[in-house]
Image 1 (cartoon, one colour):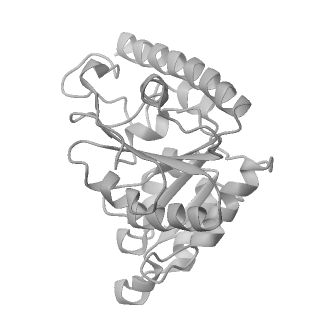
Image 2 (cartoon, one colour):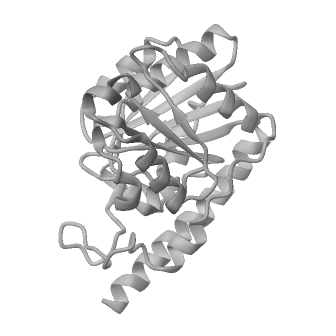
Length: 264
């Protein structure tokens, strides 16, 4: 077990180094990376499509890279916004890493893009421990997922610069207790903003875009209590016992099988 944790720490340390380098390179190019984390079905694709469309309408150059285990469905949906979009198929892998992102951006990221939205694999566990070189990490959840989600997934919500609540038009029907939810968020990540959105009603779309553009313009994002370095120092435990993936000794999956589809 000790060797397994040590290997994980080495993998994460290497990822951190690559992420820092990528962040510096993209900053020089004037690109802000927004890493969007959520569980499957949270509504982040629907919301992101509207954000991309609104950015295009406002004359703001943005791009999006979306990762999924299979299908190009999300890229097709996001491309309807008119923004440049690229699909990454992970072949069953549970998260993106900085090296993958760098490889997929080479020769593709449009010149002049101010923000790159990365729609991470739908998963609140593994992606939360991998820095992608982002400047803004956004954790999303819908009102149908339960008020206790932030305390169930403390790494994802504790490392977020911004928390986005989706599908708020369904709050009453779902019996969502928002006060309990915000209390749980505050417990995990004191001071982080919770932004209420509804893709169906186009609520909060401009607010989310404005938050991103403010960071693009140099505004300092919220400083989360759970810093990435703190997470990595504890061996990728997620507040639980160190876990294995498909019987592998370390968390260093074989990423050689990751495929990239053509730009949609």
